[in-house]
Length: 134
Image (cartoon, rainbow, N blue to C red; front, side, top):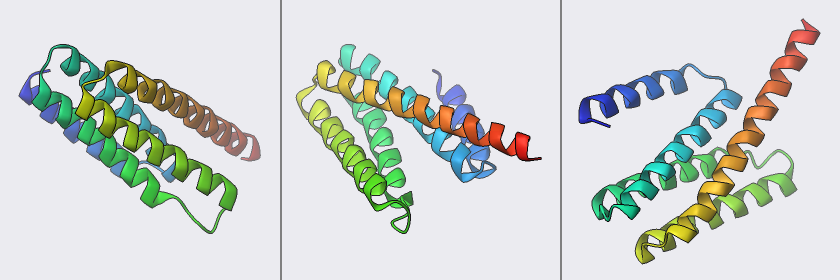
């Protein structure tokens, strides 16, 4: 992706995120994280260490945002489980980056893709329930 295209994508993503509901924002964050992780994988395989670290750092910042957004007043068990998963993913990304280990990165990519799909499904269920109620 060229620098101009990356800037345009980033600006578009920011506007979309700012106008999204909380549920939509979580989906958008996971989709962005998956995209960054795939870009990190490509950079890792190409031995582009600076880009690799930058993309992994972006994914880690998203995980940090997701952890901060957890509402401790809600289901404590679920919040604790999500915090644990997000922390494990964050730490695994650190390890993958330090060791230049594609297999470790692939573990996180698989988890991020599953989370993204789960949140998309949850958002669709919320949307469908709202449509039925209207």
